[in-house]
Image (cartoon, rainbow over the protein chains, first blue to last red):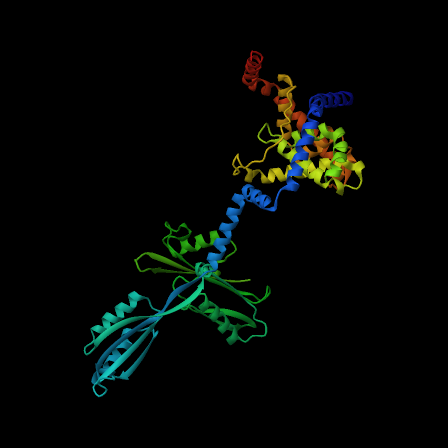
Length: 311
Length: 194
């Protein structure tokens, strides 16, 4: 048995040897001189070649590579080019009324705007200080549609004149890439030697710089740990904040999804959305996910998903 | 460099055919690649760097190392070559071997196909051993391996794979290439008739 195995191996080796022998028989000695002169000519040309020719050759042989490098360089430069973006901070409703109506109008406005996200200032009119008052109603955390509804309702109050609505905007300059990344901000904050107040200020400043002016976060102490609490959330603001080191880290991840995101066309309920989010992020538990179903401006269902994960 | 070039070609002459065969079977993928490009580039580099070779007794292994490195570069750069127009391509050597019979061509094509089924390292080892005539110790140094056993086991597995492929495909390969053989015969007849 052993002998037959040995015999087979010997035969196999011979068989393979035949193939390599065929190759070993290829003799190229006749081409030696041709190669020799070709190489000598090429190397002499290469030595004599002027620097400009070398550069020309480099461009000719690498023109696609160079084109790609130039395109990437242009893209990076374009991304760093500053662009102006305008953020709406709120809406200002101004109107006039007779002095006798000031108290009544103030009360009506109080009834009209229930969530206290406004400030009202009443001045004497410059043109007719004896009889007319000027109202300045500042609406915060509201969109244009809601502001117009409030404007229309104020217009129905008797005695209101010269009613106007103005958007309060802030214009600032930032690189294109920062503008493009505005929809998702990543913040890593080191809390060592900092008070809760200064951390809160630092985080909110970062959010503001990223264009998330309507979002605010607060840092509080909870059982000896620093925790992040979401105070206000601006529409379409998405971010992740990591506070602390690996052991004591508190993470707040906010990603607001519309029905079109994550292929949610078939999702109708909050529970279905929760399952979908868990599918996409298997490391999340039920407690980490908060889902709010709302209607957007067009009457479509919008799911707000808040993920708060503690590592 | 010119003063050393004559010495370079003296050293090259005895190993010249070995170098071409090694380069050809290392890079040839059934005519998809032009092995002459790799050979030519390797020769130019070797000619330029010849004075840096201190121990001239290691000329052969030094040459084969250059060919190995250039073949790797060639594979890496092959993607970009697709975009270079024919006018921009530099002139290359023609080292076509024309003394093969149709049967030899079949055998060699089968061997090339079998070699291309091996991994790069396996292919390099077997070609260094069979065509370069290097010992296992020398192959270990050329391939920067740490132990002899890894080279030995690689050679053994490469042989098995090659044999397995050749035995399995020998009959199929010949029958599949019948049309090519006929074409080749017609071409030879046409050449003979002028």
